[in-house]
Amino acid sequence: MISRSLARALLASVALLTASVLLAGCDTDQVSLATNAKANQPVPPKLLAAMVEKDMDLQSPILVRLFKQEAELEVWKQTRNGQFALLKTYPICRWSGDLGPKVREGDRQAPEGFYSINPGQMNPQSAYYLSFNTGYPNAFDKALGRTGSQLMVHGDCSSRGCYAMTDEQIAEIYSLGRESFFGGQKAFQLQAYPFKMTPVNMAKHRNNPNMPFWKMIKEGYDHFEVTRQEPKVDFCEKKYVFDAAKTPDAKRDPVFDASAKCPAYVIPEDIASAVREKGARDQAEYAKLVAKGTPVARMNTGIDGGMNKIFAAKIPEGSTGLSEGAEGTTLQMLAMAKAPGTIPGHVNPPKPNFDAAAPSPQEEPIVAVSAPATSTRVAAAAPAEKSQEKSQSGGFFSNLGRKMGLGTADTTATASAPPQATASVAPATTSTTPPTAASRLKAAVTRFVPGHDKSKDAAKDAPKPAVAAAKPAEPVKPDTRLAATRPALKPSVSDGAGDSGQMAGAAPVVSSNSFDSRFGAVK
Image (cartoon, rainbow, N blue to C red):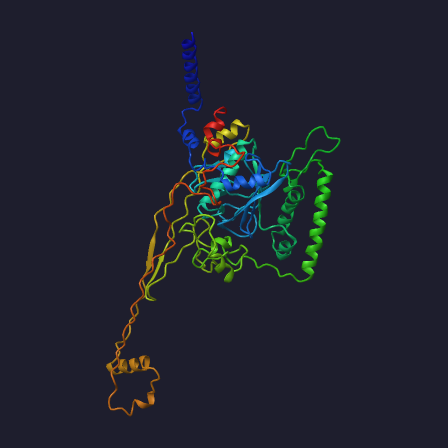
């Protein structure tokens, strides 16, 4: 009797396993994603310890803020009291474009504004190690007719309108987002700014034509600053609205349309009053700074984007570009510091573009190799940027988003870089009249004899022959910044990431990050 019951249980287990495979649709992509080593890397022990110290749960919600001028990405996490606190700040390896929002496809601009990241926007098969789609364009962008697609936060330190981190950094950020979804967060908010919205920065950029837009998104910045809660974002009349709620006499929540007239709504008084007080303080400080004659920031002179100074210090002739960070001594001091991740050899630091025939927005800048002599110029094209990340439907995270009641979003597919191209430009050939022996002798003496007095030439019976030794051309130095093969997995940028020890009171990390164990019931 017992053996018969056991046999029935085994048969039932096999049936359930078979059904689960059939429900998965025999999708090999889902199987590969569930076992994707990059996407399943555990949260580093050092970050886990920081969470414990700051009273955070591993799977509590997160919020991300980006700042171009400071070249920083902040990950905030909700504490047990319900408010968000800063967990970690990551220096951004590369961002492209100028300070200001993205307007059209191909303008190389990294977006600015408020965006929502759901599981379907996470891409474990990115051409740039790992990535997530920012969700640009949002409803506000679309209402203004702005275009663009596949704007990501990804690894590889290379940007054409994206925010690029090192592979090690994006692995950490990706794991934090993954855990927040495991904990039930349906989407985390991404706030992208030109700079930290302080009175000093607003005064420095007071003449920038983007200032009306920046003042508008500063309201959302202030909402988060005073509440430490994720602001609710809506759009109407082609503008942002933050923390809108229904009026006291309304029976249902207001319905917003980015292109239509705003419905009747109110902002909770406790939030509205706190934001007003902060705005008044900021405006008073701003007025003082302007009255003192705070210098106005220079407009873009052709520099494409920026780079955090910790990375610029590691690259020959590196520059922070449009990001903050003094050159010279500061970068020299940072050159001794440890970089937060591997900087690939193909990274292009921000440089002024004075060439009228500059690369189009769809192309990567050219990296020049030192020429051996003035008679020949050799330019080696840097490896072309990896192809735009393609839209991919039906992936694991996308299916997860649908099962959680969320819309799908475009993700990226692996792409390979085209082969490196090298072009050489031959010098123009000019014809000259052969010099006479006397003129060659005189020229040689005049050129190579130091302190030679021409007045004494006539007193000498015969000039002394002078032999000019041609200076050998310097050999071509190989470009040390060529891309190096990197391993499939990147260690954490946090110290102690390789420590196998388990923190007291913490659940085992590896098993908790398993796609199969987390979503077996969902599948």
